Length: 139
Length: 240
Image 1 (cartoon, rainbow over the protein chains, first blue to last red):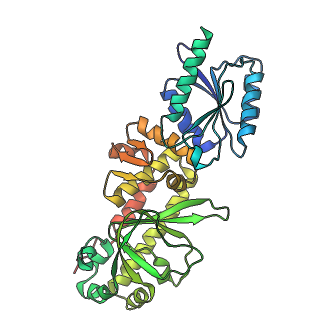
Image 2 (tube, rainbow over the protein chains, first blue to last red; image 1 turned 60 degrees about the vertical axis):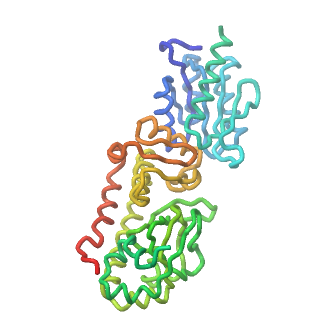
């Protein structure tokens, strides 16, 4: 896990929703994460090109795109950044049915779909779990 | 069950009426219990009944053709649901949905129009309330465009506190999203922010305000503007 900034895990956030970006970044920083923010895929790819941006987890929230498209964007950014395949990727879909609200689905390897529900700590619980596991894998 | 006279004191508009005006109106009033989520009227239906809420809260939702909706206003014990009819508009232009279960006094539209057309204080108060409601709606539009989501949520929570007369209440996840004009997923994110700031607790639609002063400091100038509009209604009255 990257510890260049002390013991703070770093989350690379790609958040297209202007309304959600501000409170989400606020929450993540309050939880003790270092947060790097991109507003879309193009911006994200530009930032990670060159491999100088390190992150312990990639979090993606895109507007007007399907879950598969969001997963593809997240994987492209992760590959472009030369993060290894163990770097967790979490995608938050824009729209979904109520019956999946509040669930986390592991789609492949360390790639997750997080269906935000009514429990305010749900996202933080998943991120904490994934980062802890990633840290253990590195040791 | 309380009589309509006892219910009268719980609606500020009715309570402010001179006795003789209320006495003429009373035979047309029927006490009803309104359930959470109940639709009182919606486009394109005609408005057949109007409601003086006594302990219920009704929200007005504007709907887009794709089904998305945003709350643009709400009315409770300070006024009437269905003021459109006194302006000569008999068809619903917004969805009126019960957001806080409770009671109201129902009146048929012809009886309300007849009483309104007699003039007097009822006419004056209904027009003043309509103005306050228009001010609330226009402020909401401005607020939705200009202010951040956390600030807007703080404002609506304060308005609901005022409406319910309680610091703890339940709003569905979907409704709160409509309230703010955002997708459902954003609600838990912004609610967490206010929770981490020690202003509220939130879990599965249950809001509890922990620090009202903090919430007032957090919100925008839109809240005191609208609050003053409604607080100033009927201020100079001596109820009969």
